[in-house]
Image 1 (tube, one colour):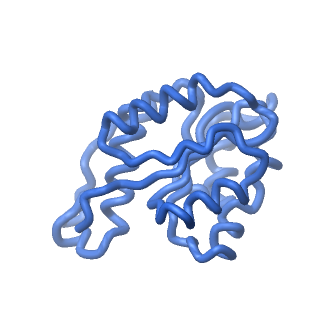
Image 2 (cartoon, helix red, strand yellow):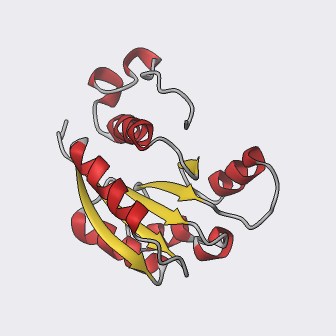
Image 3 (cartoon, helix red, strand yellow):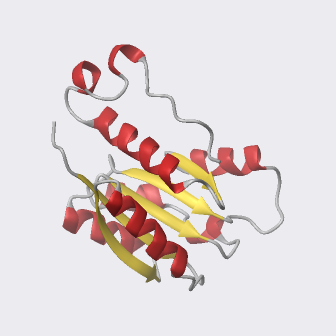
Length: 160
């Protein structure tokens, strides 16, 4: 199996907070990921374009302005249109302005095609471990050699 893990990282929407994005990029790089950090971007098309160009395994989206429901709308469909429908989609941050419980929020974005959804202040090291496991599980031979062999995925605690 390939030993590299390529990801696209970006902040979508009106949010202009890049410090957290830079910290996330550095931690993921320190954990062995090749990170294409697009920084703040205007559209989901920018994230998908970067994923196509880099051959990314995953797109990690940060949205902290409370408008993720509209800003991340149809991201999975945009990926499919561009031929990267198998890319992992992770979402993190503060997604909805004063709507529902965390369980409801997570379910909403999973239904929209995201593979994992993380609350604000999730532990980046744990996110990196889940990301590596998820990428490994999608690679050829994962059922024989990768994470989750014999149906047992490595244990990673909740998102704290």
